[in-house]
Image (cartoon, rainbow, N blue to C red; front, side, top):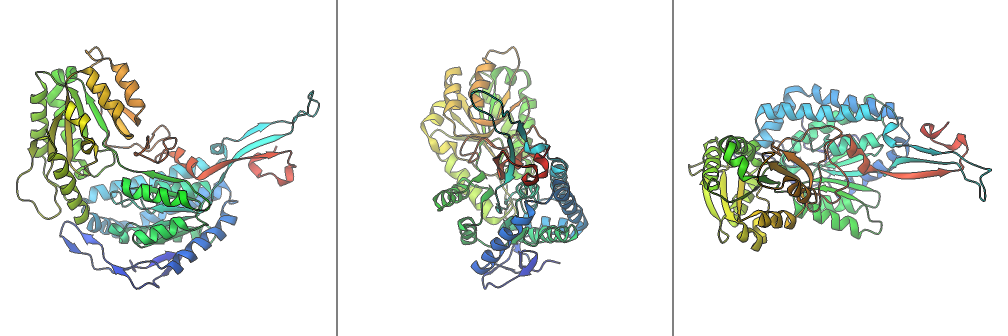
Amino acid sequence: MITGKNCIAGDFSAKGSIEFKTMDPKLNIENPTTFVEVTKEEIEEAVSSAWDAFKAYRKVSGKQRATFLNAIADEIQALDQELIDTYTTESGLPEGRAIGERGRTMNQLRSFAQLVETEDWRGNTFDAAQPDRKPLPKDDLRKTMIPLGPVAVFGASNFPLAYSTAGGDTASALAAGCPVIVKSHPMHAGTSELVASAIVKAAEKTGMPKGVFSSINGGVQAGVDLVSHPKVKAVGFTGSITGGRALFDIASKREEPIPVFAEMGSINPVIITPDAISKRGKDIAKTYAGSITLGTGQFCTNPGLLLTVKNENTQDFINELAKETIALDPQCMLHPNIKSGYDKNEADVTSQSGVQVVGKVDEELEPNYAASVVATVSGSEFLANPKLHQEVFGPFSLVVQCKDDAELLQIIEGLEGQLTGTLIAEENGTLDLMELVDALQNRVGRIIYNGVPTGVEVCPSMQHGGPYPASTDSRFTAVGVHAIKRWVRPISYQSFPQTLLPEYLKG
């Protein structure tokens, strides 16, 4: 049952006076539950409890933490249809998407559980003492990774489960030994509360310290107060560049600055060579129409920028892409605010000099349903106008027609940091593919060959992050088991007796 309260160290609390409701974007009405925003007093209680829990939780064995993570997955499954129904009414996304995302969330939890069952993930190193070494003896040195402390996690608007309350940031932080305080996304506060209740039950069943998890409701000020708190030691965020950068700046200006691992905006450039267009242009157009409109374009890996060198086949390809894109049924966006943001940004880009709208759904749509758009512009106009680089969050893509190979490379090298870059090509074509790959790899975190960027596999080899502003630290990933590395730091023990060493450094 959803109460509308904050989950403070395992207890549900509603001391505040500010209330709000979530929206059903398909029906364009408010959902019935009233949620109460967190107070500063409740934030203080949540963070202080997390700090107290950290002293014990950081010493909990990997096997015990694995049991906890697996129990969370079990409790999420036990929420059954109530979770699915709440998800769909708060997001406008279909039931199949809800079931799939629930499965992904559970699989992420289980993958981190499997990782920490042994201590291998810490990358422990041992350098034995050499007391007789000349001219100076060498001390015994042992190096490992230890957790940072309480982590603040911000739920994502576009993934109510997999990137939110028990999503990848929370799962990896708990796996590392860090308590978590989640600021739920106001668009799906009910979904978040249900998942929070599952985490609380799992913590109680597995004997985790009180305070290991909290979840709060609130807006901008709650986020500011949380990140500013001196006992919060790291932040995980998925969302807009504006939001992520604001949190990064707050964390940097603290008396003790802390890391903010923010996954932010990306237009995910796709290079389509003229040879590929010539040989399979219709197939590429159909495939990319599906990728552009997948989930109403509300993915951080949506292909918002297509690049090619103009020739006699280019316009036919663009027309085919537009035809295939607008032929797909319009879909509901997550929230009226997201729909209005899409409309504003799409209009801003398409009103720029030289931009031509090739295809746009022109039928009258239900409220919060998005009209897919394909537009095109020359390479020179794109280079001259930074406004054309902005992310349009929704079913939109801009095709840039470069005059030659040199202009194509100039555009790639001048792009802001991106999560992904894609190369659609024929192996023995006219463009230097290695040169394109070299240019792309300096701007992106993941390169796809003859595929689509939408779809982020949860596995160790996945890199989900990239140069700024795709993320605030391109050395780390937000997806896959290596995401745990964000919440730990190295420490060396020198000349320590066995009795004082952690168990995993003994011997």
